[in-house]
Length: 363
Length: 70
Image (cartoon, rainbow over all chains, first blue to last red; front, side, top):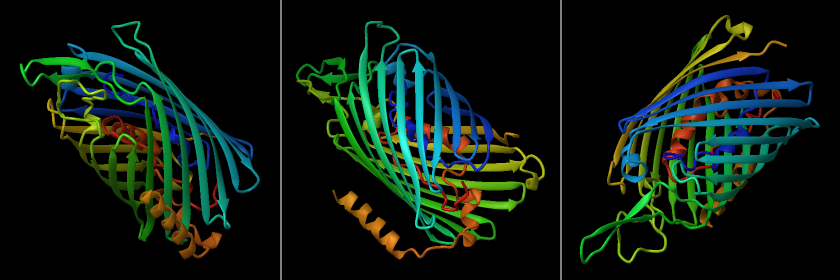
């Protein structure tokens, strides 16, 4: 958790992923590495199975193995490099009510040496207007327990709730429009036990380190608009814009665009661009002076952030495309983060590579 | 909140401007490349990287493709 406190705060958004038309299993391995000596290896496996006409279930298992000698860790958390592991297990069920309505539920648990979290979600999906309109709503409750790898008596809690509504409309035979609104409320400990804030005494220029303190409550709203369009000759394009704001004063804007080309029956390629701009939380400052303010943070993610990402995906059919063969997935992306208020390292470059396999499950 | 009003307005205009498309004309919408996310197996980890390193999250999902295929 030392590098990733909000790891599953809102991660149960996975309840809204597309429902596969058939039973299938998948496995993937992702490797993230950056120029701050952080490497994260993430194996994952999932299965999605239907039981008769109305019932379906899925399970997802994910692990993270993190090795880091990060400047963030060295300066703000522990005095040396560390290795950490995260294990996450999720399971969901979907039940069809009538012809056009699904009810669904999902549980997700995540555990690290110094962190444990659980999420429970209930949702509904309804197809309206002769299936030209799809509406989804999901409500998620969560609870986290935050510990410390050195201080065994450190024990903090937080709870979260989230309501997400998604509306998808068929605009014409080639175009879909998505609108999503997502509100979240988190209560409890939201700082990092490893992060201190430097306070400067303006008279003596003496420095002192004090614990980070953030508000006990955070309420945020995110909204997204997306267009998905078939361009013809096997080409497709997706574009979306997301805006986020919360009562900590943090506002962000995200633009994404994707092009997908089915060049041959066995080969599909995709290219993906993403840009992100974020303003700081109200109480975030690059440096603090005595007397120390009641709210204070050195969290780079609560300051000014910029991010650019470019990636590519290749999907290759491992057999006759008409025979529903297994699919090989290859993804590679490069990204640059600017944490403009984070003195130890304002710019970071990272690479993410993923290899995966998706295969139908024979009945 | 201005953002919420804008989203509501877009939703109303979207519904009002869309003609109904018959099921036999939705074949293209059922194509895997029209799904969101297109590759959930590899995109979940990518999204996780963003959420850990940025200060905001949420509103990344999408409903079905309108194909009536499930």
